[in-house]
Amino acid sequence: MQRRWPWLALVFLIPAGIIVGWRYYHWRDHRFDAVILAAARRYGVEPALVKAVVWRESWFNPDARGSSQEFGLMQIRPAAAQEWAQAQKLKTFSPQQLLDPGTNTLAGAWYLAKLLKRHQQTDNPLPYALADYNAGRTRALKWDKGAAATNSAAFLERIDFPATRKYVRTVLRRYEHYRPVFPEENR
Image (cartoon, rainbow, N blue to C red):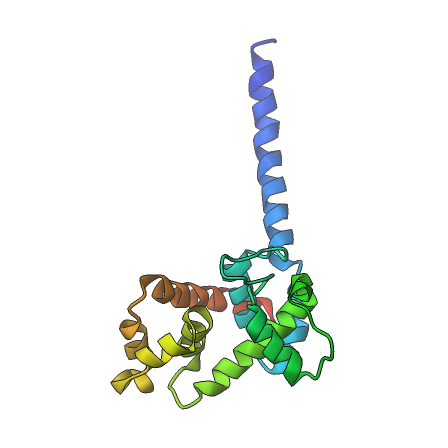
């Protein structure tokens, strides 16, 4: 009987661990869906795109801070947040407010909408906007030459920062993964 006890414990602990892990993953992956949906709707951005950026930027950690002063879920820089605050006519704004998931996703969705509009003349503005979001306007303009000015596949090939190219591809894949999460009427 004593020899079977460790095996019996394993038989129960392994499934329990799997269940707990799955529930944590599900909770982490969906706990900000309402906030993401509200911000995306307000600025006309697909919720799946906002969620994909949140996933890549912070892995759903609202307290995340980047090495270049980025804050929160969408890793917004203070300058971009200040631009958002001015556009929204907010009288008082502090970068610390970016640690609030609602404020952060509003600023991030606004910024994504701005970048998507900037690249409307292309066959697919998503790669351009994501490269701009990740590497900045100056670098995105550097890659936006010749055929890459309107052809997103050519644009992706021109990105000479491996990390940015990987970022864009990863967010695009995750965007496709999240599209079924948000029903058509929520897009």
